[in-house]
Length: 247
Image 1 (spheres, rainbow, N blue to C red):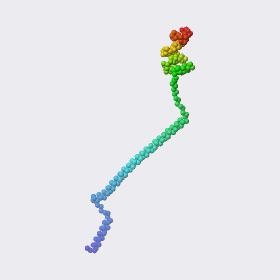
Image 2: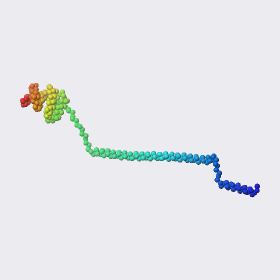
Image 3: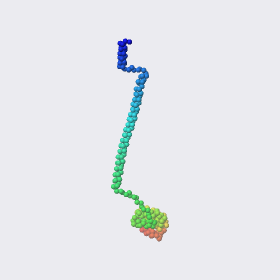
Image 4: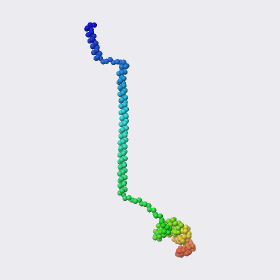
């Protein structure tokens, strides 16, 4: 080879190298090469998407928790308001109670009247009879009538029941209650037929009938006393009364 040709060859080789260095690299269009290039990007995008999705979930969860916190805060605030109202009401009630207590402390206490029961009748039949008779003689007729009725009730078989029955009739006469008086005198005759008060009771029945202008009925009573109890004081009074009335 000639020297001129060798120099030209070396120059061409250097120029080719310089030209090749200035050109972009040749891309491999094969499937394997493209898969190798695409795969890392795909994995990276998937991980990124998963991270983003997880972040979205976390954000939603946080939002939900924040909503619950807000609800609880509202509820707590509501309870606080209710508690404030309750406290205010309690304070008001307490104030009213204290006010009432203060008024009661100032207001004089008025004793509740106690019903006084009438004391039970005490004493023997004789004592009670004498007390009732004394009341009748002193003009306390109403009380005497009550006492005589109680004696008749409490000592119906006693030795003074007939006398109490008779004086009850006399008390009715003093009150102007002639019908009740005749009923009382009738009871003396019917209930105590052997009593020494029977002639007196019959005499008073005659007097009452006479005061009512029932002369025929009055004559029956007076005549009965005169015929059946001739030696009694009642008989003597019956004769006098019959003569005065010209029966």
